[in-house]
Image (cartoon, rainbow over all chains, first blue to last red; front, side, top):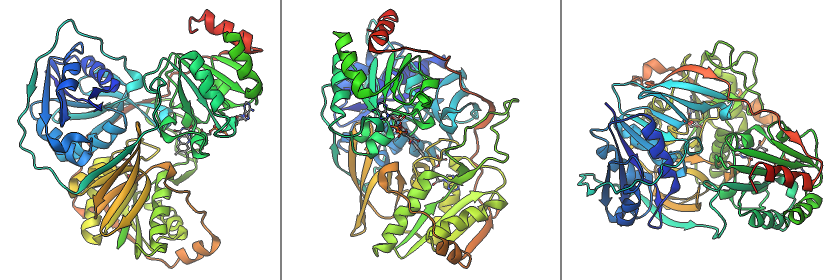
Length: 314
Length: 248
Ligand SMILES: Cc1cc2nc3c(=O)[nH]c(=O)nc-3n(C[C@H](O)[C@H](O)[C@H](O)COP(=O)(O)OP(=O)(O)OC[C@H]3O[C@@H](n4cnc5c(N)ncnc54)[C@H](O)[C@@H]3O)c2cc1C
Ligand SMILES: Nc1ncnc2c1ncn2[C@@H]1O[C@H](COP(=O)(O)O)[C@@H](O)[C@H]1O
């Protein structure tokens, strides 16, 4: 029987939404137990949130000052130690999980499944390759611990349980390196919904033309209560910060509504939005590849269409 | 300081990948192959560190089949000083690649290793982190800025929340993100010079690494197709259609 350890992602004392999605993937394995590990300097609030997730049977915490920031070199040895007794260790396929999971897997001497999108059995999974152009069935060795990152866009968030799972402090003997030090995190403050969990997303591309022009994308998003995303070209051109990039090398998202404005629809961008409910494309080029995947397409100049849209929205 | 760079050859990013009808893999016959874009960025960064005097030698390494030489010559043409070809007819998975790189590190003793954050064929994104773990050295993944001074690297990393800055002691493994730099084009003079640069070849089997390929890729399928949508004629029609779908 399988027993799965999910490594919680958290920031500023709050459980990240990616953890609840990772728990859903873990439950799909139909294990005997799903447990969550919280590595933090002050794990209590995060652990309490994790304990309320449906399907979680126990939450383990390690409180160490070194865990104040999610540094892979610090976290991986603890995860490798904590993994004893578990058949699977799952992390979200966010930059947090992508950084830490392979380091933990290598310490355990095992392979890793990246971007797990489907579970066929306890050791058989599906994952994307070639920018999502091939969905590959992978079989992991049942004799080894399965370390995987979970493609969060493929999984719903686990719901809230009626009660709360027990929270226990875990004593770990792990020597931690001092060769890696956190300096700072630069974040663009925003009151808009979080791109990775928003139900609606409005994205702008190179067609928007400038940083100043990007304001019309923000305005439209605010009117819709949507998060804002961007193509790589828009980020590279400096119209908006990197954390807004959607695609193969940015964020992979699955909102109910995705609006691509002035985005051509390069394969690397489409990888990031394949699981969106409804895709709307606005582009002045009727031949743009984005129209091949759009559920609703509108050909025209975005600078004319967006004001009209705002008016029609009332 | 010597810099070791991972230089993988992959299916070019512009190729429209086709899954073979029998599900045994993707079509690679006659398909354009190029350097992994992230590895061109890794090499560019190493060359810049060389040019600014921080590094004194740039060595590229590729693990791949016998015909990988031309690809490595391109890297030499771009400016690398030396190339190492680890011959393996079978594609290697990240844990094996990391074990191979560890062997190369033992031989070469680099002060810095730069790999791509992911190879765009397998999209694993693991080798750098695994290598850093096996080597017991720091890792700085998804780098968009790299500053080296006093035996340390200050690295700006592209993370979901924004930009994270960390400081690591050298030697370390850095993996590149797209905005780290824009790789130069290979010049004709570079290609000429590359012909006489050293390219060392060794068999993977001769390195004595344990095989780490424990994942079996048993079936390939094309992704589910999205059905073709409808075109609307103006903003009002778009809003009406969104309302009808219950999205507004
Ligand atoms: C390894 C690799 C990874 C990559 N990862 C990503 C990724 O994660 N995400 C990503 O997005 N890209 C990624 N890319 C880049 C990708 O290939 C494209 O270059 C990029 O997505 C193009 O962005 P764009 O559509 O905004 O720009 P363009 O392709 O230049 O398209 C701009 C569009 O705007 C339209 N337009 C212009 N003016 C107007 C107007 N006034 N009104 C309406 N429409 C207008 C044009 O018709 C055009 O279709 C990656 C590339 C590589 C090589
Ligand atoms: N066969 C290989 N040859 C050279 N470099 C490799 C190879 N495999 C992986 N790498 C390096 O590791 C990075 C990440 O690869 P991956 O973990 O497969 O996504 C690549 O960008 C390369 O720098």
